[in-house]
Image 1 (cartoon, helix red, strand yellow):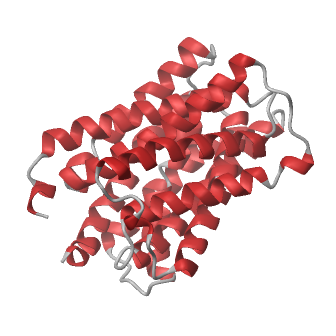
Image 2 (spheres, one colour):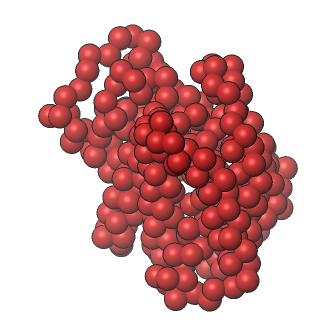
Length: 299
């Protein structure tokens, strides 16, 4: 569509809003992580994310027609990896400050660019090499100081889970790149959230807990924030180019930092501050490379 690239201000505003909503979702998840089992958190986050997504598709007159699919296997693979990524990233949030967990999630575009070389046979360009080098430096700066003493095994496990979540997210996005030639964005989002809901529900026999009113409200908010954040990001990428939105990844990290300082009373580590430009620089370069790869598919 012609209008997709000539509304940059709308795209930027929606990107900023998606960052705020995503941070709100993670705050809700972290707040309940000590008292609610992981699978129960995933279920509520996913089930209530369906509501804004369905409302959005109905408003665009795409529901239920947009859910028709010719690639059920592709949806199952994408959604399965996405669900595993959600479990891993939420487990990381429970063990790390929100800002550090969010920063590790920014590795996904870099890992996706590397996966394009290893899995899809794409060219390993100098831009990808630099992005990979920056990402490795950022992760090393963040993680290595906590590896020596072994005094906080939970934090180290959180780093591993955060990196695993980013790796699984990258795999899911590579699958999206393949199936998006025939599948609508609405179908991809809907089936992903549906599979995550079922995956969370499958943990019920492992033991869920009775939810107090405040905890239930936070879980519902996590779902609503997550679904709305996905919609805002989708529209942002429709209205503005990836390269124009990339600098606002820095702004999106303001909210997790403020949440750690003001809500959870967690200090911002020196490792995070040093790793920040490395990881976000790598993500920005990967986004620029992705733009060059994706534009022919818009025809």
